[in-house]
Length: 399
Image (cartoon, rainbow, N blue to C red):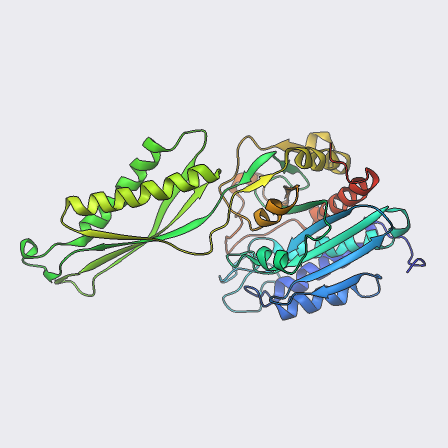
């Protein structure tokens, strides 16, 4: 493919926008994304890449051989969320109850654009670029499937970007060390003794005990977790009872724990069990605490890789448009599994729609009204291209 005409970001940006809209109209969930996978494969045709698909999910891995040298991984996630879209976009989702509300459609399209540009420059890369298009980020740990399939074999460093609708369009936000939190789910069953609602003294009512557990968990966080190594414990669902005049046997709580260090992650779960069991026992109830499967670890940027990514961003969007986050964000990402295997970093690309003057008021990721400025996609493509090019030019050196 040495005769492939060299392309710039400007040459591919219209195709990037068109691909983003194509994917946006037909969002898919989880690990099986056949339609999205097909769109990616079609867009990579003719680029001279070595392309493989996942053995246990709809991932696409495309290798660009630019000669002897190190290998750098660029990653985009592809899956959507289970919610009805109310963004008002003319290309809104056509699939009931599904929406690209976290920008993964943009992530995928920008990485395809980067592949198109880099493939046309393979003769002067000095190494390999591996493009990972990954399903299942939204709660399905798709990154672990990609790792099991060998996506990190031979990789020296990995980079990703995530759109930020609450960040000014075209800006880049970065942070060394923890940038996103761990995410875990838990269930607590408070077990009492049922009875008639008119005679609560002949029963052991678990409902007020469950309410007390919720409040006690908030106190637990403020009194056992360091303020500068924070945790968020939230109970988002309480279920109990079947009708108005029956005291139920059981009240169930469902919640989430988010932390920015593995030590606090362990501590919170230890304390959570102690508090739930203790409060319940004080009222003659028992408590069963379960930590559910599927939690993500803390996303920890390698310090050198994060500084490298920020330096590249300054060359792409300008010094004044690159900001360092003062603290981690409490969202979670399965890119954390990639960063457990190789050094790397994730940063945020601002995509606040231009009609919204205050980015803080824009519908956030996971909102059914989330929109993004497609004018910022060119910056994302350029950032991917520059990251891979500079990493290989340095021979894989980050510092």
